[in-house]
Image 1 (spheres, rainbow, N blue to C red):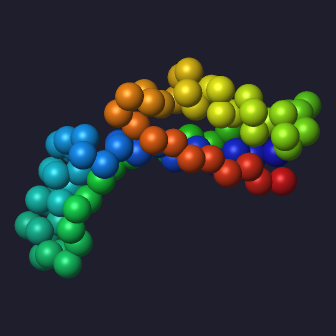
Image 2: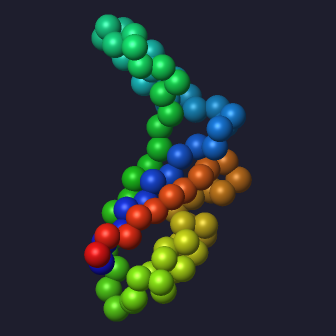
Length: 80
């Protein structure tokens, strides 16, 4: 199985990198794009687990390692 994890800053948390990207887009003439937020993307291969167990363990590693749950949200998808 493969898993895809997306980690993003929580609403209200300052995102200087997103602001810099938004400024760069404006300077390139792409003024239609607003409120840019950046995040992290992880792709993992899972072996030897059923889908339910994989979801449980993936939730654990998202909370313990892949995200800072004080300022970040995460979501994941498991692909067969």
